[in-house]
Length: 113
Image (cartoon, rainbow, N blue to C red; front, side, top):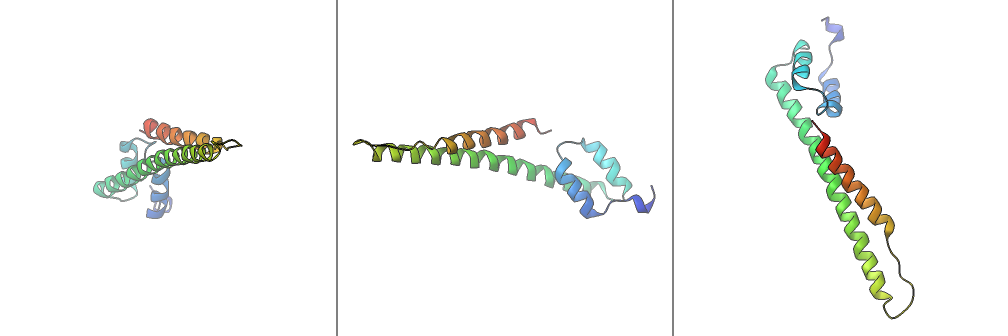
């Protein structure tokens, strides 16, 4: 491989951020070794970006759950405030967005390689 075709560390990190869970490790090892990286360095980078994607998915799940619970709490508070009669609000948007966000994070967590 010619030196002009080599990727810089910044390019590899950007590539791994997107593809760490999508591309098999032995393929990444082969490609990055050709660019002059040691196996230890490659495995550290791969591990770093696999952990990062796992954290993002967990964050989506937690954020979705929190949003859903906030919607439930606000709906309950509105209902109790109107218990003597009158109108109350149901925060359907927070429920739906919270559930969708939670399951999006769960789906991404389950389907990663």
